[in-house]
Length: 317
Image 1 (cartoon, rainbow, N blue to C red):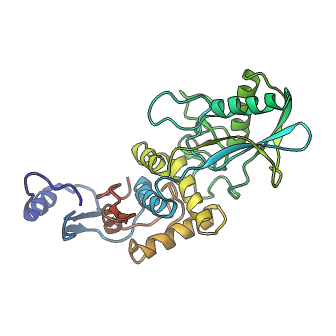
Image 2 (image 1 turned 90 degrees about the vertical axis):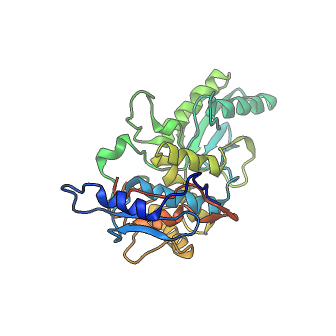
Image 3 (image 1 turned 120 degrees about the horizontal axis):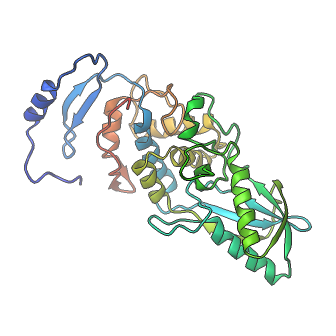
């Protein structure tokens, strides 16, 4: 059950404190407070759907945990192609890094993948390759039509192959316009450092049944959700709902992912009249969610246990 305060909190006192908060020039306030143990509504104001902004990630994370499972991982693979070609295949790991992570939470890296690939090539006597890259697991477009151009510092296009959050310079929030090519170039550099000559880098379809030379697994879904909420990671949240769409047999497009997310929320009684889902990270201003649904999501069971990923939300921030 949810944690219970050591000192009981009076519902009347909570209402009195919230009533006393100056509204000033605020004309559109949405508040919802519920008892985490009993579910009793303690305070409600402005219950109509409104723009959730990043609080939408609470709902995306809950659904991802429930549908995909907390231990699910996503592979990034290298497969043999025709002739001297090898193909880097994106599996939708939003936290894939170029270099091996040294701190928490760790995760998969292109450095590790390149080392394993170089060893597999050496074992078969191959020292030079052409590199293809395949990001086709997710559908087009990679940029949501309702995301403002000004948000390109906060979210990257969403293909199934990306690394380092598509940030060429960690000190600069600017994103690479083609995250898959950026990731492939980073992988090519790691292969060269591992002693493999890379003659070219180009998009390519992974051959059906191509032998896997090497593979690395992403962090589990539970950790990806944690990072998405801890850092308000737009890339991770959006990628998770793409995987939810795939798990439900739908294409991993923005439209399909949003439709599936809405259906999953409705199935969990996390839906009120007038709500609308446009994306998974809350950037789209077309999203509409009620404060009550955000609060209810905090106690929604996942695999028999409370989700514990939320409990209160500020809508519109």
